Image 1 (cartoon, one colour):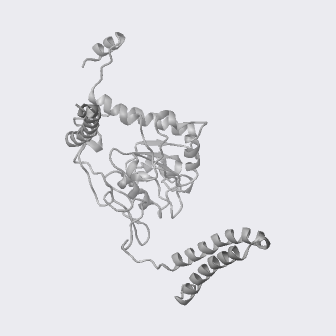
Image 2 (image 1 turned 30 degrees about the vertical axis):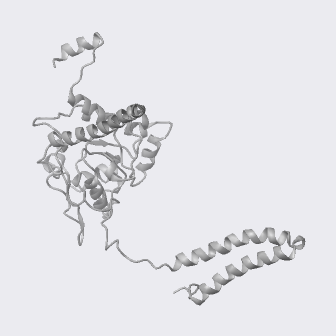
Image 3 (image 1 turned 135 degrees about the vertical axis):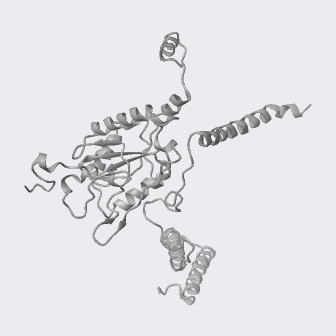
Length: 213
Length: 123
Protein backbone atom coordinates (compact mmCIF):
# COMPACT_ATOMS: atom_id res chain seq x y z
CA UNK A 1 0.00 0.00 0.00
CA UNK A 2 1.10 3.50 -0.78
CA UNK A 3 2.54 5.39 2.21
CA UNK A 4 0.64 8.57 1.40
CA UNK A 5 -2.68 6.76 1.24
CA UNK A 6 -1.86 5.08 4.51
CA UNK A 7 -1.17 8.32 6.38
CA UNK A 8 -4.28 9.84 4.80
CA UNK A 9 -6.38 6.92 5.98
CA UNK A 10 -4.93 7.08 9.50
CA UNK A 11 -5.88 10.76 9.66
CA UNK A 12 -9.43 9.68 8.89
CA UNK A 13 -9.31 7.15 11.70
CA UNK A 14 -8.71 4.05 9.59
CA UNK A 15 -5.74 1.98 10.62
CA UNK A 16 -4.09 -0.09 7.91
CA UNK A 17 -1.21 -2.47 8.29
CA UNK A 18 0.64 -5.17 6.44
CA UNK A 19 1.48 -8.68 7.58
CA UNK A 20 5.12 -7.68 7.78
CA UNK A 21 4.44 -4.70 10.00
CA UNK A 22 2.19 -6.76 12.25
CA UNK A 23 4.84 -9.47 12.52
CA UNK A 24 7.63 -6.99 13.24
CA UNK A 25 5.45 -5.13 15.74
CA UNK A 26 4.78 -8.34 17.61
CA UNK A 27 8.43 -9.30 17.78
CA UNK A 28 9.59 -5.77 18.61
CA UNK A 29 7.26 -5.50 21.55
CA UNK A 30 8.14 -8.80 23.18
CA UNK A 31 11.87 -9.38 23.08
CA UNK A 32 12.59 -11.97 25.72
CA UNK A 33 16.20 -11.84 26.87
CA UNK A 34 18.11 -14.82 28.15
CA UNK A 35 18.77 -14.76 31.89
CA UNK A 36 22.50 -14.88 31.41
CA UNK A 37 25.18 -12.71 32.97
CA UNK A 38 28.90 -13.25 32.78
CA UNK A 39 30.54 -10.53 34.85
CA UNK A 40 30.05 -7.05 36.26
CA UNK A 41 28.00 -5.84 33.24
CA UNK A 42 25.33 -8.28 34.39
CA UNK A 43 24.79 -6.12 37.48
CA UNK A 44 23.95 -3.19 35.21
CA UNK A 45 21.70 -5.51 33.20
CA UNK A 46 19.89 -6.46 36.42
CA UNK A 47 19.61 -2.79 37.36
CA UNK A 48 18.04 -2.12 33.95
CA UNK A 49 15.24 -4.55 34.68
CA UNK A 50 14.53 -3.14 38.13
CA UNK A 51 12.00 -0.46 38.99
CA UNK A 52 14.22 2.58 38.43
CA UNK A 53 15.04 1.88 34.77
CA UNK A 54 12.18 -0.55 34.17
CA UNK A 55 12.94 -2.53 31.04
CA UNK A 56 9.33 -3.76 31.19
CA UNK A 57 8.34 -0.60 29.33
CA UNK A 58 9.86 -2.21 26.22
CA UNK A 59 8.17 -5.55 26.72
CA UNK A 60 11.50 -7.12 27.55
CA UNK A 61 11.26 -7.79 31.26
CA UNK A 62 10.62 -11.51 30.85
CA UNK A 63 14.13 -12.82 31.38
CA UNK A 64 13.98 -16.49 30.51
CA UNK A 65 16.11 -19.01 32.39
CA UNK A 66 16.13 -21.31 29.36
CA UNK A 67 17.55 -20.57 25.90
CA UNK A 68 14.60 -22.42 24.39
CA UNK A 69 12.30 -19.58 25.39
CA UNK A 70 14.57 -16.61 24.77
CA UNK A 71 15.20 -14.59 21.64
CA UNK A 72 17.78 -12.09 22.83
CA UNK A 73 21.15 -12.89 24.31
CA UNK A 74 22.80 -10.06 26.19
CA UNK A 75 26.45 -11.02 26.42
CA UNK A 76 27.06 -9.06 29.62
CA UNK A 77 30.65 -9.24 30.67
CA UNK A 78 34.05 -10.73 30.06
CA UNK A 79 33.90 -13.89 27.98
CA UNK A 80 36.69 -16.12 29.15
CA UNK A 81 37.96 -18.82 26.85
CA UNK A 82 36.64 -21.37 29.33
CA UNK A 83 33.14 -19.90 28.98
CA UNK A 84 33.13 -19.20 25.24
CA UNK A 85 31.95 -22.69 24.14
CA UNK A 86 29.05 -22.47 26.58
CA UNK A 87 28.07 -19.03 25.28
CA UNK A 88 28.06 -20.27 21.69
CA UNK A 89 26.17 -23.41 22.62
CA UNK A 90 23.52 -21.39 24.46
CA UNK A 91 23.19 -19.17 21.41
CA UNK A 92 22.81 -22.24 19.21
CA UNK A 93 20.08 -23.56 21.47
CA UNK A 94 17.98 -20.43 21.16
CA UNK A 95 15.18 -20.67 18.62
CA UNK A 96 15.05 -18.31 15.64
CA UNK A 97 14.68 -15.36 15.42
CA UNK A 98 17.49 -14.58 17.83
CA UNK A 99 19.51 -11.46 18.49
CA UNK A 100 22.68 -10.65 20.37
CA UNK A 101 23.61 -7.50 22.26
CA UNK A 102 27.30 -7.33 23.02
CA UNK A 103 27.31 -5.37 26.26
CA UNK A 104 30.44 -3.63 27.44
CA UNK A 105 34.04 -3.37 26.37
CA UNK A 106 34.86 -6.97 27.34
CA UNK A 107 32.15 -8.59 25.24
CA UNK A 108 33.07 -6.35 22.31
CA UNK A 109 36.83 -6.75 22.33
CA UNK A 110 38.11 -8.21 25.58
CA UNK A 111 38.18 -4.74 27.14
CA UNK A 112 40.75 -4.13 29.86
CA UNK A 113 41.52 -7.86 29.91
CA UNK A 114 42.24 -8.04 26.19
CA UNK A 115 45.89 -8.99 26.74
CA UNK A 116 44.93 -11.77 29.12
CA UNK A 117 45.75 -15.28 27.94
CA UNK A 118 42.35 -16.57 29.02
CA UNK A 119 40.08 -13.84 27.67
CA UNK A 120 38.22 -14.03 24.38
CA UNK A 121 38.82 -10.86 22.39
CA UNK A 122 35.19 -10.25 21.51
CA UNK A 123 32.23 -12.59 21.28
CA UNK A 124 31.65 -11.55 17.65
CA UNK A 125 34.43 -13.97 16.72
CA UNK A 126 31.95 -16.82 17.19
CA UNK A 127 28.40 -15.49 17.01
CA UNK A 128 26.84 -12.70 14.94
CA UNK A 129 26.28 -9.61 17.10
CA UNK A 130 23.44 -7.18 16.32
CA UNK A 131 24.15 -4.31 18.71
CA UNK A 132 27.36 -3.28 20.44
CA UNK A 133 27.24 -1.05 23.52
CA UNK A 134 30.54 0.42 24.65
CA UNK A 135 31.20 1.15 28.30
CA UNK A 136 32.90 -0.43 31.28
CA UNK A 137 30.26 -1.23 32.33
CA UNK A 138 27.64 0.56 30.23
CA UNK A 139 25.02 2.35 32.28
CA UNK A 140 21.43 1.05 32.23
CA UNK A 141 20.54 3.95 29.94
CA UNK A 142 23.02 2.59 27.43
CA UNK A 143 21.42 -0.85 27.57
CA UNK A 144 17.99 0.71 27.10
CA UNK A 145 19.39 2.60 24.12
CA UNK A 146 20.66 -0.68 22.72
CA UNK A 147 17.20 -2.17 23.18
CA UNK A 148 15.65 0.68 21.27
CA UNK A 149 18.21 0.32 18.50
CA UNK A 150 17.45 -3.38 18.31
CA UNK A 151 13.73 -2.62 18.14
CA UNK A 152 14.39 -0.23 15.25
CA UNK A 153 16.43 -2.91 13.55
CA UNK A 154 13.67 -5.51 13.94
CA UNK A 155 11.06 -3.02 12.76
CA UNK A 156 12.93 -2.48 9.51
CA UNK A 157 13.31 -6.17 8.68
CA UNK A 158 11.80 -7.50 5.47
CA UNK A 159 9.63 -10.58 5.49
CA UNK A 160 10.57 -11.64 1.96
CA UNK A 161 13.13 -10.74 -0.65
CA UNK A 162 16.90 -10.74 -0.81
CA UNK A 163 17.41 -8.56 2.26
CA UNK A 164 15.35 -10.68 4.59
CA UNK A 165 17.00 -11.51 7.92
CA UNK A 166 18.91 -14.67 8.64
CA UNK A 167 16.12 -16.53 10.38
CA UNK A 168 13.80 -16.23 7.36
CA UNK A 169 16.45 -17.47 4.95
CA UNK A 170 16.69 -21.24 4.72
CA UNK A 171 20.26 -21.11 3.41
CA UNK A 172 21.65 -19.17 6.37
CA UNK A 173 22.82 -21.27 9.31
CA UNK A 174 21.07 -21.25 12.66
CA UNK A 175 23.91 -22.86 14.57
CA UNK A 176 27.50 -21.71 14.68
CA UNK A 177 30.71 -23.59 15.33
CA UNK A 178 31.15 -24.32 19.02
CA UNK A 179 34.86 -23.86 19.80
CA UNK A 180 36.71 -26.67 21.53
CA UNK A 181 39.49 -26.42 24.10
CA UNK A 182 42.72 -26.87 22.16
CA UNK A 183 46.26 -27.29 23.38
CA UNK A 184 46.99 -23.57 23.55
CA UNK A 185 43.81 -21.78 22.54
CA UNK A 186 40.26 -22.37 21.49
CA UNK A 187 39.93 -24.30 18.26
CA UNK A 188 39.03 -22.71 15.92
CA UNK A 189 40.14 -19.30 17.21
CA UNK A 190 37.36 -17.63 15.26
CA UNK A 191 34.42 -18.43 13.00
CA UNK A 192 35.84 -17.19 9.73
CA UNK A 193 32.41 -17.08 8.07
CA UNK A 194 31.29 -14.25 10.36
CA UNK A 195 34.46 -12.57 11.59
CA UNK A 196 37.67 -11.50 9.86
CA UNK A 197 40.52 -9.81 11.67
CA UNK A 198 40.55 -6.09 10.84
CA UNK A 199 43.35 -5.06 8.53
CA UNK A 200 45.66 -2.56 10.15
CA UNK A 201 47.73 -0.35 7.86
CA UNK A 202 50.96 -0.43 9.82
CA UNK A 203 52.63 2.04 7.47
CA UNK A 204 49.93 4.62 8.20
CA UNK A 205 49.53 4.19 11.92
CA UNK A 206 53.24 3.90 12.62
CA UNK A 207 52.82 1.08 15.10
CA UNK A 208 51.36 -2.39 15.18
CA UNK A 209 48.56 -3.66 17.38
CA UNK A 210 50.75 -4.54 20.35
CA UNK A 211 51.96 -0.96 20.65
CA UNK A 212 55.64 -1.52 19.83
CA UNK A 213 57.18 0.54 17.04
CA UNK B 1 -36.49 -30.90 24.81
CA UNK B 2 -34.01 -31.16 27.67
CA UNK B 3 -31.05 -31.43 25.30
CA UNK B 4 -31.31 -27.76 24.34
CA UNK B 5 -29.97 -26.83 27.76
CA UNK B 6 -26.52 -27.99 26.69
CA UNK B 7 -26.50 -26.29 23.32
CA UNK B 8 -24.60 -23.16 24.52
CA UNK B 9 -22.01 -25.41 26.15
CA UNK B 10 -21.50 -27.33 22.92
CA UNK B 11 -21.21 -24.09 20.95
CA UNK B 12 -18.63 -22.78 23.41
CA UNK B 13 -16.74 -26.07 23.28
CA UNK B 14 -16.63 -25.98 19.49
CA UNK B 15 -15.50 -22.36 19.56
CA UNK B 16 -12.74 -23.23 22.03
CA UNK B 17 -11.52 -26.13 19.87
CA UNK B 18 -11.66 -23.95 16.75
CA UNK B 19 -9.69 -21.19 18.48
CA UNK B 20 -6.98 -23.59 19.61
CA UNK B 21 -6.75 -25.28 16.22
CA UNK B 22 -6.78 -22.04 14.23
CA UNK B 23 -3.84 -20.56 16.18
CA UNK B 24 -1.89 -23.78 15.82
CA UNK B 25 -2.65 -23.90 12.10
CA UNK B 26 -1.70 -20.24 11.71
CA UNK B 27 1.65 -20.93 13.36
CA UNK B 28 2.13 -23.98 11.15
CA UNK B 29 1.35 -22.07 7.96
CA UNK B 30 3.55 -19.17 9.05
CA UNK B 31 6.47 -21.50 9.64
CA UNK B 32 5.83 -23.20 6.30
CA UNK B 33 5.74 -20.07 4.19
CA UNK B 34 8.11 -17.68 5.95
CA UNK B 35 10.21 -19.15 8.70
CA UNK B 36 12.28 -22.17 7.63
CA UNK B 37 12.88 -25.08 9.96
CA UNK B 38 16.47 -25.12 11.20
CA UNK B 39 17.27 -27.96 13.56
CA UNK B 40 20.80 -28.77 14.65
CA UNK B 41 22.73 -30.88 17.12
CA UNK B 42 22.92 -28.15 19.79
CA UNK B 43 19.33 -27.10 19.36
CA UNK B 44 18.05 -30.66 19.57
CA UNK B 45 20.20 -31.45 22.61
CA UNK B 46 18.39 -32.77 25.66
CA UNK B 47 19.85 -30.28 28.10
CA UNK B 48 19.91 -26.56 27.62
CA UNK B 49 22.34 -25.22 30.18
CA UNK B 50 25.15 -24.62 27.69
CA UNK B 51 27.13 -27.64 28.80
CA UNK B 52 27.10 -30.92 26.98
CA UNK B 53 25.29 -33.68 28.80
CA UNK B 54 27.55 -36.48 29.93
CA UNK B 55 26.61 -40.12 30.23
CA UNK B 56 23.15 -41.58 30.53
CA UNK B 57 20.30 -40.22 32.61
CA UNK B 58 18.98 -43.76 33.16
CA UNK B 59 21.08 -44.57 36.21
CA UNK B 60 20.15 -46.15 39.55
CA UNK B 61 20.23 -44.10 42.71
CA UNK B 62 20.88 -45.74 46.08
CA UNK B 63 17.78 -45.47 48.31
CA UNK B 64 20.02 -45.28 51.40
CA UNK B 65 19.41 -41.65 52.15
CA UNK B 66 15.70 -41.99 51.48
CA UNK B 67 15.26 -44.60 54.24
CA UNK B 68 17.49 -42.63 56.58
CA UNK B 69 15.41 -39.51 55.90
CA UNK B 70 12.10 -41.33 56.50
CA UNK B 71 13.30 -42.66 59.87
CA UNK B 72 14.48 -39.21 60.86
CA UNK B 73 11.12 -37.74 59.88
CA UNK B 74 9.18 -40.32 61.91
CA UNK B 75 11.12 -39.56 65.07
CA UNK B 76 11.00 -35.86 64.36
CA UNK B 77 7.19 -36.02 64.34
CA UNK B 78 7.23 -38.30 67.37
CA UNK B 79 9.07 -35.65 69.37
CA UNK B 80 6.18 -33.27 68.74
CA UNK B 81 3.77 -35.84 70.25
CA UNK B 82 6.11 -36.58 73.15
CA UNK B 83 6.20 -32.99 74.31
CA UNK B 84 2.48 -32.71 75.31
CA UNK B 85 2.69 -36.29 76.57
CA UNK B 86 5.45 -35.31 78.97
CA UNK B 87 3.64 -32.15 80.09
CA UNK B 88 0.37 -33.96 80.85
CA UNK B 89 2.03 -37.14 82.16
CA UNK B 90 0.90 -36.87 85.83
CA UNK B 91 -2.75 -36.37 84.87
CA UNK B 92 -2.96 -39.56 82.75
CA UNK B 93 -5.08 -42.57 83.49
CA UNK B 94 -3.63 -46.07 82.96
CA UNK B 95 -5.34 -46.65 79.57
CA UNK B 96 -4.12 -43.36 78.13
CA UNK B 97 -0.60 -44.09 79.28
CA UNK B 98 -0.71 -47.59 77.71
CA UNK B 99 -2.05 -46.15 74.44
CA UNK B 100 0.86 -43.74 74.27
CA UNK B 101 3.38 -46.45 75.12
CA UNK B 102 1.95 -48.66 72.34
CA UNK B 103 2.46 -45.73 69.95
CA UNK B 104 6.07 -45.42 71.08
CA UNK B 105 6.56 -49.18 70.86
CA UNK B 106 5.38 -49.23 67.25
CA UNK B 107 7.91 -46.57 66.32
CA UNK B 108 10.72 -48.27 68.23
CA UNK B 109 9.80 -51.51 66.46
CA UNK B 110 10.31 -49.69 63.18
CA UNK B 111 13.69 -48.51 64.34
CA UNK B 112 14.66 -52.06 65.36
CA UNK B 113 13.57 -53.29 61.93
CA UNK B 114 15.66 -50.59 60.25
CA UNK B 115 18.62 -51.48 62.47
CA UNK B 116 18.32 -55.16 61.55
CA UNK B 117 18.13 -54.24 57.87
CA UNK B 118 21.38 -52.25 58.35
CA UNK B 119 19.74 -49.05 57.14
CA UNK B 120 21.54 -47.07 59.82
CA UNK B 121 24.94 -48.28 58.63
CA UNK B 122 26.14 -45.77 56.07
CA UNK B 123 28.12 -47.40 53.31
